Image 1 (cartoon, protein in one colour):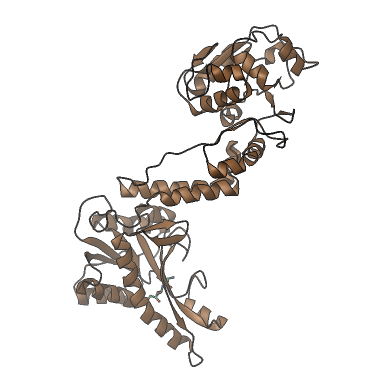
Image 2 (cartoon, protein in one colour; image 1 turned 120 degrees about the vertical axis):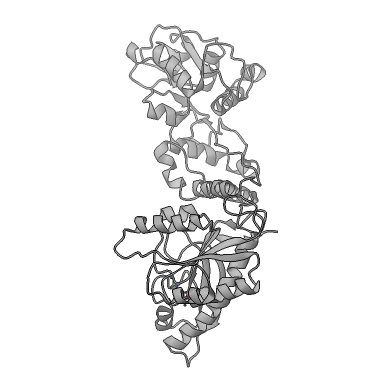
Length: 456
Ligand code: GAR
């Protein structure tokens, strides 16, 4: 970016790498310098002295910029060289991109460097930089993608490869680009935070890519996104409870995990889970509360029979968010670590899901992703599938959708009708849900993309 407009320069300023290096070395001192003029034929350049603005603090932007100058100019490579902060031969230092921008905006004839999104957001005029194909290129997300692609092989081997001064074959590449890095510990102290960081990075590498260009960032080419996924795989998600069985959701040391069952109906899955908790098949756990959104749910009398705490939080006539807030408040009041939906016929709001990241399970009577929604067994039967079953999965913001923990399959028999098929699926549900709870509470897994995989 630069501040030459008021001198009548309306056309974009064009600079070659050596000219830019000459300016930053303090050797090219005015905008009338023959080197600058040569690159801008027909343009009336102002008579001002050039004022160089640079960062005074350490910065990744400086690292990219100085790496470029070192590549383009042997003199710069020798002194001051490259790095996140260098000893500048000329100019005025400013703190942060704001400081550099401030200097440029206030000083006629000034030139500075900031990342593209900053220049665009602040409507700063930017120069076109000549690349190796001798084309003067505007900075843009597309021109950055072109530069990244030119280094694709090298980046595949080492993601730290600088993306500056790409070869002439990348005709439309902007020559001063770089990747943004995150330094993430493989194992985090706070399991809840670590899990969320991992999920956030997962978002950046996948869905978040679609918003990159509106912020003037280039999308990652698929091979680099894959590389990112591979590295993310090395980051240990908290998974269940880390270390297994000794910490609860709030990171407190506990011997027993509190499970809550949410239901709307007869509660046969709940009963099977309760039996396995009582017998110790699901170890180190207790059912802290059974919550029904319907006062007439059969599951409530099961709870009473088993001497377990049951609550009715009626959903009738309430907005989803309002009801969810009441349920979450009850779960928190009971210090619940794991929420198990067992025939809970309500879609949770995204806010609810976010209150218990990777701590909400659901059972569905089909082999997902086939037949989500209501009457899954009937849907499968009518469709004519030969194999049916059930799925226990983590709950995310979509219906019957999150990462799969356990599935059980059974053949559909010629002699089956809808009822007999549903009954045989239900038998499997009663086995699958407890297996999934035990697996999750043991915490010996991680979620990679959609895959729930055991830790090596
Ligand atoms: C179960 O078949 C469960 O898979 C299903 O409701 C039934 C509840 O039975 N859940 C869903 O369809 C969720 N989409 P239960 O009350 O006897 O456990």
